[in-house]
Length: 640
Image (tube, rainbow, N blue to C red; front, side):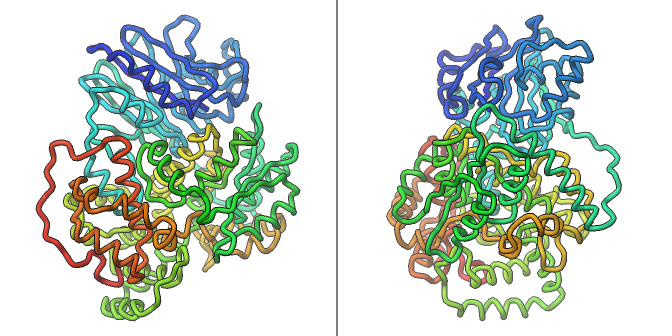
């Protein structure tokens, strides 16, 4: 596991000190070794967290003839079988590391090599004789990769910090990315929140040569095997794939642990890891004792069932929450309005004291329809068949329900569902997990623009059915929210997180499944539940999905209230040039006076301003558009 970075300087010299600053900024991603390659045309760097082949495999790695240079972040889980295949073709290896497998795979297959790799990765390859730079990212977006074109050169890195290290790069807000952020709670690729800096899309390869840039997908579209004919057949195939994935992803020369929530996904990972016969397993959890969403009883049942050596941290008001949130503004690169980043921070901090690698359950919800949003999509289709006045009347009635301090209460879900049923199916789907609608943004955001989100939603496949929503969430929500959050919070503590469900073979399997094997009536993740029905305690299978989050509504009225009001002060809001202060003030008042639960809205706004301050990102030469003061932003109960 590493952090990578690079700068071409074919036309202009690289300013002094950039490489040093950039490498230091990625120390948390790879504290064990810093390496660099520098020539007249390019500078490449890598920081390494040693996981496999501890004695060799430091980067950059250079081909025997000195023509090809590789830097790589991630793990290639099928590197042993690829090594055998390449050796049969005449390749000679000097190390046992997967980086050298990438090098020889490129020498053998060129840019087609990326489709042979099964793992999580961001890779940069410089070919000196062709003055060509190639970047590639794994097909699910587990590992990050940013890039920017500047003065005819290409800059790239695992984090925005690498590009910020170049003094010539302006730090102006990207309004397209910000419009999406305010609606979705995350920034979908290729956007970032900085104008001129982009994210390479998952499954894409980019080639740069003398200022000319091209990007395309390397994912092969091969004929898929027939779908399983029965649920029993599907369970048998999934069982085999999970065994294979866990065997590969448990391979490590450093201690490995498992993040355990007490739910179906992480418990499945623990069960297959135990079956693989590794040493006594280490498990780690965050609990919220005394809260309605606490999962400590289920966690205790699972850890007792499998006999893991367990460590947990109870996250409550006594934790140093403000310190963690301030640090997240530095390590996050871009703000994430997903409040689940906070417990992930404490989980990673705790785990890193005992292990260097963790396995986690990310991806199962997006592959097998685990979220409540997929049920909402179905129910809202029925709701749209009745006159709009009916859900509007129900919204008015819902406004009479008392505002709850629960993380996601019944009244909160009801109001979100009813309002979403008044939107288009595509907009409603992202609204379930998002915050502000386009109409709401127009009332408080000076640069509101429906175009960027419409463009992203335009990539959703046409036609009815569940699969279009799953594909969209895999491409955007999974990569740019869930995996982004896990990567930043884990790597901030020099911890590698591996998601076994995102093995490409399991991803392909899920795409072949009939919808009824995923969402079966009211039962989500049907095939996974059927598979695990005799492998896990019954309570785990019966429990509803709770989600990894914080009681943000409550904490903003209590322990985090001073931080909220200080960050979203009138002075700070006006200085940002982004928002109407009177509308922002009304948001704060409505939440603090329990007129509405706006914790998730306010969390996204708070971390945005913290991030802008941390990285000195602003409007640049843009001028805010004039807007009228409004008495309220979310002035309809359906907007809550």
